[in-house]
Length: 206
Length: 206
DNA sequence: AACGGGCTACCTACTGGTAGGTAGGGCAGA
DNA sequence: TCTGCCCTACCTACCAGTAGGTAGCCCGTT
Image (cartoon, rainbow over all chains, first blue to last red; front, top):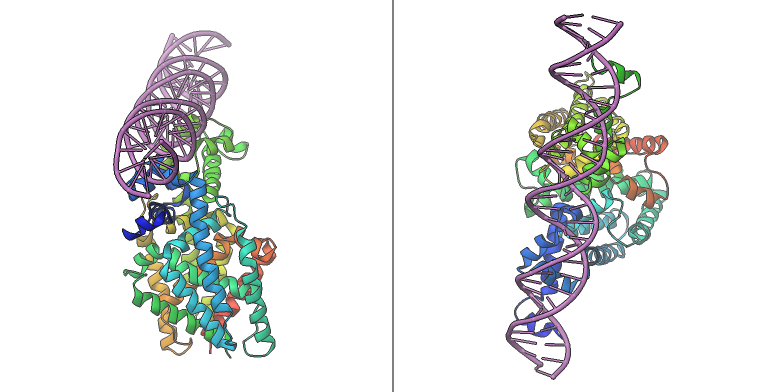
């Protein structure tokens, strides 16, 4: 309703604030970001920003909920696929890469949240992700029982995969310097995705 | 000399400050930690802390240099081993786990530094780690050429391993909640280490 | 043995600056 | 005229860092 006029000229101020906040929080963390930084990025003053969000914490929570809904949707779609065996695992890995490559700022916020044990966000993070984690565990375990995958501990396996995939995006600036190249070019992301897929396939499929 | 009397009663104030700073920076990050927090943890006032270190940044740099010297020493020793083939890879992985399990606070500081692209530390981080990275790459490549390891891209392989191992420690509080268990008990660390070793072995050794 | 300078380690009290948040006014569009 | 958006001006709380002073120890001199 009120957005109609603003959507004609691209995005509403509220959306611009959310976008800028996402980028700042990912870049410098919660404490490292000031509301002045965000407001300046949008081109307004801090009190004007606080007209749209009641507090810094509320703004952060809204950003984090965008992240969660995007991720949960993306991963649930991939995990609901009717594929089976290795095909399904590969599908989920590639879906994860697509998701993270599309929104690398989300990955860095999630990493910061994991480091800070979720003190900034009023959401039960692990409570939301546990169902996904548990169903992924059940999938791998059943495929191992059926002899389709080499036997590993499913929980540790998923944690290993989580770390291997997320790190490439969260630590991209650091990896840039190790590789002497931009880690997040489309080509390099595709290469690393192919590598992870081949590596996990080699480890899992006898 | 002047320390003699203090060393009788355990550690010098300077060391107590470094220990507390390490813990605070790991727990809440550079911006999230105030000098008051650290001083209070030691049981002195902020100006007294600043008697031992000229600034917050200098204190952080000292903490980070403790980290670097510990890691570089530990990893160089493992990588200089005369073992070869899979034995050497396993040895380095287990050395990494030992190192990180002994100093989980270091892992979290390193992760934060990777996320912030090293803005807090006046050290050329990647310049120091590049030689280790390159020599690890060269090792894997030569072993693949010799047919001892399945063929993978060595650079991507090491980044995958780095992510898989580090994440278990840096995201421990988050993993606690996924597993409904303490990730960093000696037994769980050993289990995860065994898993990673077995997983990489399955992927690499034909 | 007694004195006194100089040192370390710590304190309280303060500075300039910046953080998040609020109050209230101007003003354009419905 | 009313509502929504943005502004300036202000608040309190906290930050890193400084100024200045005190207690106690070491050590050379007398």
